[in-house]
Length: 405
Image (spheres, rainbow, N blue to C red):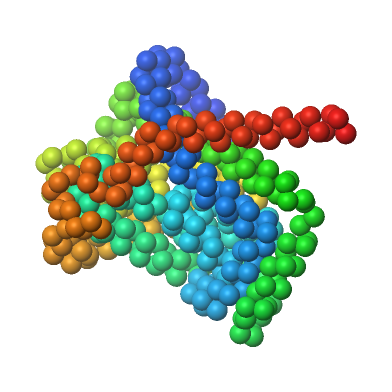
């Protein structure tokens, strides 16, 4: 019965979206272009180097090396192997869905058990500093010092989620092989790295080619989700679903003593972070603290667009989605509360935050993060096109060798 209801819901939703696309083709096309532009200019060029590097480090056994050294830190704190430190660091540096991709790869390599992988996925998907400082703080709010508040709330909240999730799946711990108790050493870590590299029988060229192809394949999938949810969010607003659900969220905000004017931007942010954060920054009637708290929540929640990307990445493994979804709600709540707590010391008591000592009032053009975003607007499409062309050449070369062989 449950499966039949699920079939009806899925088919009905798809038909509804199809009819909406037919009825509002111009608006859907505009939203599609907006999503494509974001992926083409920013997402692809900013994530591609991290994805390729992660694939190479796993392929060459470096992650094994890192895992042995960081085992005494990651195991007591988060109950995951030391290799999880690599996923955590890369996830924070490059943003979602890097943490999910690395966690899935580590699970495929059997460096994690199922429960450990589910714990790791739950706290390794974070917003990148580029997005928090460049897009949200500078691009939307034109306030560089806001980035410090949002970043601190986001990353501290992320760590708290990891600590909470260490208690998840304790009944399944017996499925994990016995953990080494001896103190790790550089020599031991090197031996594990060498053993891992020798176990991979692929030649150097194939490892590099696979890294490029796997990374670009994942990023193309990410681009599809960004475009899809950009269109869905626009259609929901046009047909009146967004205002209807926003009126329900308004009651929740009222209970929390937050301005009800943030209900519609919050609903938009639950689907797609960028559009939601932008809408929140343009809400003039709400006070700054309320806007910052809601932005922190949607950054921690990740948005259904990012969650769909993560679900697609982990679908090829036995990693379950439900722990990740629960962790997203937990992260959003933690980030919102931390924003309230840290608002005075990290925002009101700071006069400026800029590496060059430039006052915040001078605008985004003078900030380092703003300059990076402007650079991506120019060079991003070139990097994206070059990456896609490289992937095509690798595929053509492999097909040629396969037919020739």
